[in-house]
Image 1: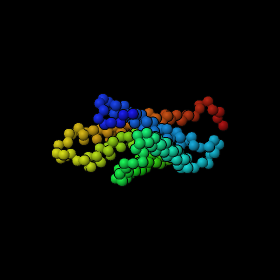
Image 2 (image 1 turned 180 degrees about the vertical axis):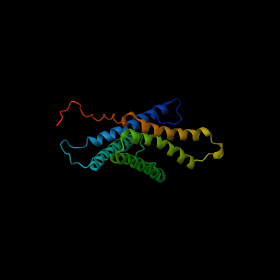
Image 3 (image 1 turned 90 degrees about the vertical axis):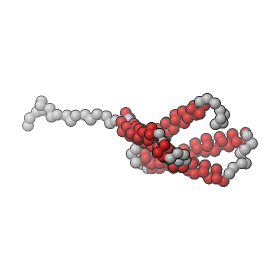
Image 4 (image 1 turned 135 degrees about the vertical axis):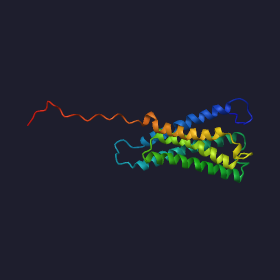
Length: 191
């Protein structure tokens, strides 16, 4: 795996699309895991407990993919236990906590009757906006905000409206049509 930022081509785009795909199915898979945590026949299971059990396995998955895999890669390069900085470690830990809080927030949203299509549409429309705003505040434009291309602001408006429309009009959210109430039969016997 070549993770050099200087490598030519569109390798970064392949990795980005891998992330889009995996995070795109994340909420749906997490919801499925939560609902399948119920032991067959146990109708008394607390839904909150089922969410916590699902989140526990998210943690196991993070341990496997975010602890063991990079540890193995670092060990293969002889870098597993040296060369860490406290600032880098703290900011990376904070990033991991933010990600875990976000994953937990998704489960809590499901518990508050949010559906995966709506919750994840809002998350994935809103997260890039937060990223753009925080990134712009931390690294403000060199020539001032007046020099920012207006299409940046148009993109923010489109992302907000697009996120709303995808969440609001997602086909998975459409309720089945209500059946008309049965009219009284004219052939019913009279008393």
